[in-house]
Image 1 (cartoon, rainbow, N blue to C red):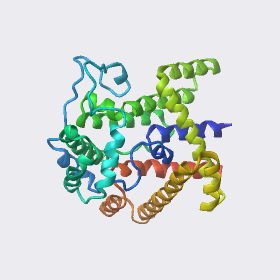
Image 2: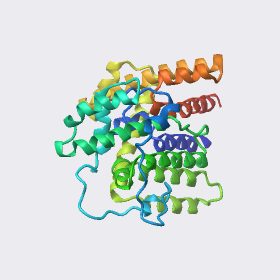
Image 3: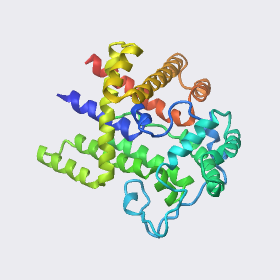
Image 4: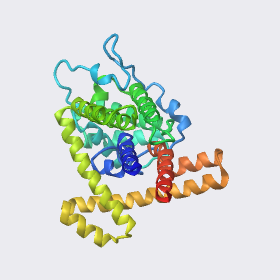
Amino acid sequence: MAQPSRTWAVAATVLALTTAAVVWWLGGPAGPGAGDARTATTGAAAASAGAQVQPSSAPGADNRFFARRHAITTDGPADPLLVHGLRDTLEALLMEAGDASDPATLKQRLAALVNQHFPAALATRALALAERYVDYRVALGSLRAPQDLTDPRALRDALEARHKVRLQFFDDAEYDALFAREADLDRYTLARLEIERNTQLSPEQRTQALQAADNELSAERRAERSAATEHMAAAAQTAAFNASNADERTRYAARSAQYGPAAAQAMAQLDRDEQHWNQRLDQYSQARTQQGEGAGLQQLRQQLFSPEEQQRIDAALALRQLNAGTSGS
């Protein structure tokens, strides 16, 4: 009976770290190759020098990731730049800019494109924010995902580390516009994982704790979680297609009937992106097995993966091992 809880834990972990392909489809950060500057992670500090900001929390506020939702307040009129969907707009801007060999080149392209994505009155501020967003994504490459995807403590530390990187580049209002929705669901997902893994709880206590975690979410976040759950079902369908080696025509027919033609086309593109990701992951894994850790492997890592993708590599390989162990048991 351990299999269902293990499966749930893996799914929750993938959702918490926003690495699952279904998260891309839901409108999260762009997938592989979407406008990332493929640069060495060791250059993150240099790339971001002078671009970081100091968090502007209220005096005495606890700015840690798992306390932040209680520390942020909104005063004054709404900022027309810092609106819901800002992160999607920045990702679209980066995607249009395309791949670049270094952050400086990417930023030059952004300057030429920013007016196509933001009103003229906001373009200057939007460009400055986009440049810091580039530096932030480069800095993410210095983080490593936890080796054990089912360890709540490791996941908590990973989320806290990512949170600290975000605070280096964005003030409170910017952070909320870019990440607040995702962060709420991350905290909720980890809370559920910690409850499920707590062997000291009785069934009644576990039920009560899960209900309390649900109550922490706003109605809006609960609706978003419900939508994510529906798309997890779509991901399960994709896994079944992969297991049966279903061809593109079969997949499209089933998805189009269930979700509509537009969604079926989007999922077909996602299949292709995932295949490309797995091919690169295979190449990296084989190289690591053959030559071990070292400068050559690090160079290959930077060549094959964007800075944001690099933080997914260890988690993806660990998930492969976990799945292999599960199928073999």
